[in-house]
Structure formats: structure tokens, C-alpha cells
Image 1 (cartoon, one colour):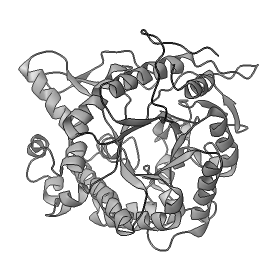
Image 2 (tube, helix red, strand yellow):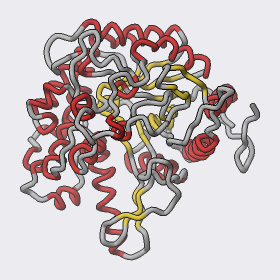
Image 3 (cartoon, one colour):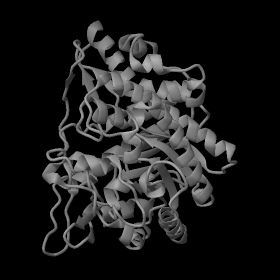
Length: 447
């Protein structure tokens, strides 16, 4: 397959660039009741009528738990150098506490061994939204104790698997748990409680810091950092009102997480907007921000969409959207957010751990899936990432979301985000056109 070129000719990435793809446990593993796995908040949430499209659940998903070797072979055949996945907390600790479930750990040991055998570097996420239901019943992320239980879980995983994992990511997209799980309520646990939401934000970040400290205390050799979905926020016009509104919006979208993790302070404009009596502000203890800002080795950035903010604080769409109506397709936002992080927070190593879109993929009679829209999207966003590298951003790797079609949370199985088509009726895997394109990009080191 010929490789497209950019407007100025071929683009080449650094020789050691980490070309990768990403998944998460609940979205692909299935085996929801096997080998001692406990219930998660997503098992509970997805069984409530009306919560997910078509009533879909992750009970089977892409059956990766049983088909992981086949999936690893696909990754090897694509030439992936890095695979970012998540570990299921309820598979390791069915009730969120206590001695780890050895059968759960054994699965991840097999997965890690398989990655190493195929020359693919593992990047393991400790929490990708599947909180053990037993902990939710005890207060979930509104409870400070959950952050400490997470540190215990992290320590158990570090002890069992740390010799096989070069890069750890702690919490995946705390903002999504806050906004989708506690503000809008269309993700687990399905709450609509703004005051609880930002206390949850604080406890998620505290959990991150405690996990970082657990790795250091155990003399772990792996690198560690958080995974944040960052959305560049632009004013819709040049008025002072729109500029101020966009700045505050950016505080909630980005600085609430970046400042605390990398500077050791919450943004004052956000705290003032929440007010001194908010549960978050009242929940911050003296040493919390020192824990939250425990030094990390890298930052994982996930970019999907920009946000345009009006003078009254509402938002507008300025660009075409994907099948996910919230996602505006704006590749320059990738450049803007990567360079912004480096400019504002210094030269911390960065990895893009999610970037992609759903497309209307159809498997044809000749076993092909022509997802040309995904190729265009990835080419344009990789071009923006390359520009960022050229501007001095220390970007180490890029992971397409997603390796496989999977359970897309409240959207069920209607949206297909994968490089690989999954026929859910048979669990057959078929490489999409984008997968063939990505294999060529990896082989050439660019396009």
C-alpha cells in the first residue's frame, strides 16, 4: 500500500518512536464472571434498563480474556511497539480489598509474557473506570478511603507484575469519571450531583498520588504517570467576556488536573467558582496536594476534541463531528494541547495514549472494511503530533484508540472505534483498511 505524504513531503518520526494502540479491560475482556472476578460499577450500571444502548453490557465484549493470544498476534503483525491496556481492579481484588485473586493476576502475567515474546512494550493502566462494586457500595470515590484502597491494590499489582511492566499509568481520565459519572450521569455510577463530582475529582487525584508513592516505596523500577484527556478551550470571539469564560472552562477541563498533578496546587479561579463550602474544598487536607504532586516520570495525553466557549459560558460546535456527536474533528487541537503542556508545565515526557474516532464500518463480502475516514483522521492528527515534536515537545509515543472494536460504554456496541473489526456474533477479527495503513506507517516510521 502506498503511503500518503504531507503537504511538504514525507513526515518521519524519531527512529525510536513508540507506535502503539490502546484498549481497556471492561471494554474488551469479557469473562465477567470467570476465574474469581468480582462485580464492577459497570456491571451494575449496564444492567439498569435504559442506561446503555440496546441494553448492551461488557459480559462478553470482544472476548479478549480467551482470545488474547490471537489479539497479540495481530499486534505483532501490525508491527506495534507499544500496547496500552488496563488491569481490571475487580479481577485482581473482587471486593476491592484484601489478598489479590491469583487467577486474575495470572491472566495479566500471561498477557505480559505474550507481549514480551512478541517484542511489544506493555503500558499498563491501573484504573480505567471499573471500580469494584463493593467499594461503590461503601461510598465509591466520594469516600476518601477508596483512594487508600486503590493504593493497596496498586501495590499488590506492582508486587506481582512490576518486573514485566516498564510503564504504569495510574488513573485513566479522572475528568470523565467526574463529568460523565457524577455530573451528567450517563456513565457509572450514574449520578447527577455537582457537589459530589468535584470531591470525587480530588479523591481520584489523591489515589493517583498514593499509587505513585506506593511504587516508589516498593523500589519499583517502572516509570509512572497519570492519563488525562485534555481539551483545548477556545473563546468563540475576542470579547473579554468570552476570553474569561474560556479561561474558567479551561480550569475545569484541564488545569484542575494539570496544576494539581504537576504544580502541587489547584487553580484558584476554579476553587473560587466552587466556593469555600463545596465538598471538594472542604475535603482537601494539609498534605493532600503534596501527595497528588508526587513526582512522575511521564504524562499520558488523550486528545479527541476542542471546546469553543461563548461569553455566557456555554459551548458551540465549530467543526464537523464524528459519529460520536461530542467529538469535533480538529487536528490542530492536538498540536495546541501538546505544545501547551510543554510550555506551561515544562519538558515532562509525553505519550499520546488515546486518539481516534468511530466510523460507520461495514464488513463486506470480500472480508474488507473500508474505513477511509479513520485513515484521514489519524494522518491529520499524526501530522499535528509531528509538528509538536518539531516544535520541541518531548513526545515519545502515540497509541491509536482503539486496537479492537469494543464496548463503548453507554453507547454499547453501536460505535466502532477499532483498527480491527470484531464480528461480535462469531468473535472473528478482520483488519480494517486503517490497520493496513497503520502497519505501513509503522514500517516506514511515518508517511
